[in-house]
Length: 315
Image (tube, rainbow, N blue to C red; front, top):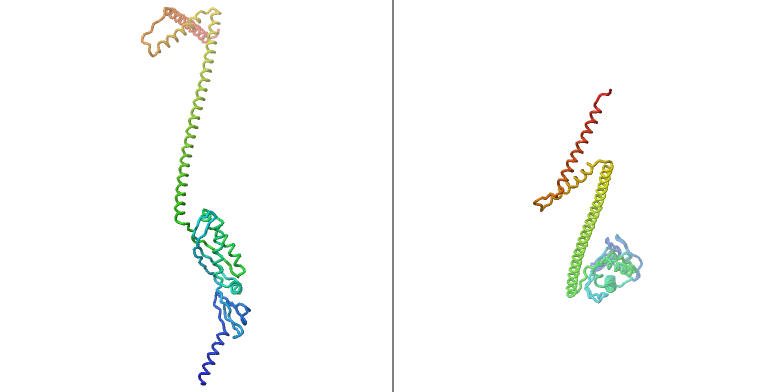
């Protein structure tokens, strides 16, 4: 009987000590209740509590936790049904609020995230939901973090893992994408042909303009040459007229003979000319040539007399 009593006392002492000494592990915080009412929060380390008066209420995990959001069907703004899932990273910042402001923290956070996923995706059409995943994550994080703030919880990230349209819609999107790429290819090809035609027409235009400018310049120069030739002819005619007026007939013979020679030269250079017929006035031409010879002889004699007079010593 005495041994049994001693055993009971030992067990009671052990229970009392276990209720008296509390060690909170790192990464956790425990709430303390006195007769069922929250009084304070125990941080990691060694603590002492009065047994039977104070007791441990909730043991809250203060480390960042991951909450897996199950897949759910969501109807987008353009009535497309997609299947969406994701993950949520959150952390308890206030153990007392997380313990007493919400009955089941994980279930409440999960329901809140799933509801807001349907709300956000329901306000977007299918193309936006597939191409703006970062915007969806940002909207969800903003809404869910604000909603969970009274619970002492900080939502760090929300990531949509997958947005899966139904199979028939995926096939339609693939056909649409293929048609769109073929359309862009045809447009690019047509644009290339158009640019090529424009460049070719512009090149022909520039070539025509340059050819016209060349012909214009050539005509101008040819007209200018004819003017110069006419001026030279007029000057030569004037000189011959002056010579005739001064009584020098050889000048007229030279002028006529020169014209005869030029005419015969052109006749001789004709490509189809096989036989050359001299006119009856050819003897006149020969006479003109004789006159030219006399004129040249007189000019040469005058030049020799002038040179001899210059070389003779002065008297």
